[in-house]
Length: 358
Figure (cartoon, rainbow, N blue to C red):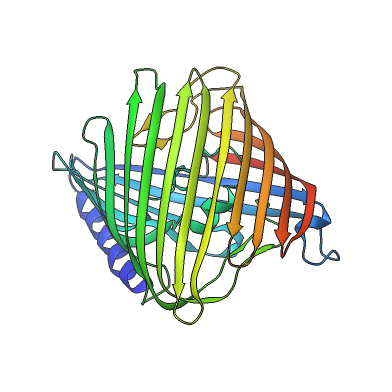
């Protein structure tokens, strides 16, 4: 992946530099930083002698968006949290055709409604377990997208991050009825067929508390191929948002057989101002408000069928939007997990985030 990025990034810089000599190019610089603190009980730890709290600079991202002409644009984003430098987005997009946009480079694969929502705009501090485990996230690839009428569609070919053997074809289709005030009803589905080439695959996930231990653990698989499917449903009216998603996968290991993992969530939010979130092209954006309180709620679960393991969480939260740049989030989480018939929990965790965008 890094080899391909080494070609894409210089190309972006060359195009940007040459375009800046003309009158057209538009450059927009921005970024955001998130500071998180978690406090949790022993349930969230494998070893109760470990710390029951954690504070992290969770994300510190810088980005530049360039519009070279009416049809050509690009985005380059990096994350510099925890002393590490990671390239997040690095792509070029062509929008000159009426029926299709073409995006080339590192980008989010079109699967997972919650995954496609920016971390700045999610209802809760952490995304749900199923989203973190199964939704593929960012990879190098080529994606075709279109928005005919009330529909949106995406189809792309992607190479797995840090793997020369793994690749996938991912597609998403959504339909929505939207009025001028962004009241809407949304229905969508996505599929992904992936060749993993014998790479190791293992579920290793926390119970939606970032600083805690990974308690949702699966078998180490030498995965040959993987099939992903998701369905998503969302409704917004006068500020109230109701959102649900279910994702499942079959993973084939030549020596162990097929492993089936599945999970979903249901979450709601309501800003006391009653203002709607912005909705565009099958994706949900933020609330544009000042000194607004947003109440949030979520239930989620994830199941590892062959391992006889299951986890469930229940969370409530409140978000305070000072303005478009500054936001505070607080979540209270209760979780339990089951392993070989034994149940551990419910027990509590608390998470807090301070988020600044510029």
